[in-house]
Length: 115
Length: 112
Image 1 (cartoon, rainbow over the protein chains, first blue to last red):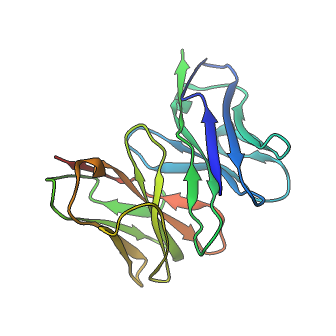
Image 2 (cartoon, rainbow over the protein chains, first blue to last red; image 1 turned 180 degrees about the horizontal axis):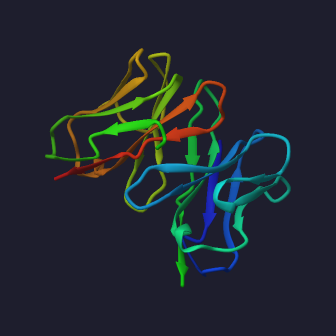
């Protein structure tokens, strides 16, 4: 079975500081991993995804994530936080088994950006 | 604009009632999934439809049901509403040849 753990339900950074949101996964098969962002009262927007190939994945809005199999991690980073990055971030792994491509989400990390 | 539209955006229902939520897409896809996101939680998979047939279900009771239509629209029906059904319901489509899901903005359901 697949699962995702996001460490830190709330993260606060200053504008211009490094953003690091942590995600660890569990999967019995090579994982497909995703990061989504959710702004208040909105749906989920895909930031980036890892399927196969290059382990450093670049996404939208300056975010990137690195797949580390040995650490079972897929942490999300951004070198310099902007006020508009304040949102909730979800890490997800694609489920396997049966005929489903369901996504299994973590509980989310709420990012606050201080001026 | 994600190309996935959900309606209504907000809805208030009374316990025991039935509700239908709708999802439509501007472009072709074979697979549509529905998720429930309770306040402060990550989305939970309800079920998935592929070519108008349910082909995967999460840990939700049978009173949660769905339909997928040939015109790229989909419905989520919930019978005998309970207070715990209050949540944001998200529709997600998997575009042909893609690995990532595109989500709609959701329907906020409140059961009182």
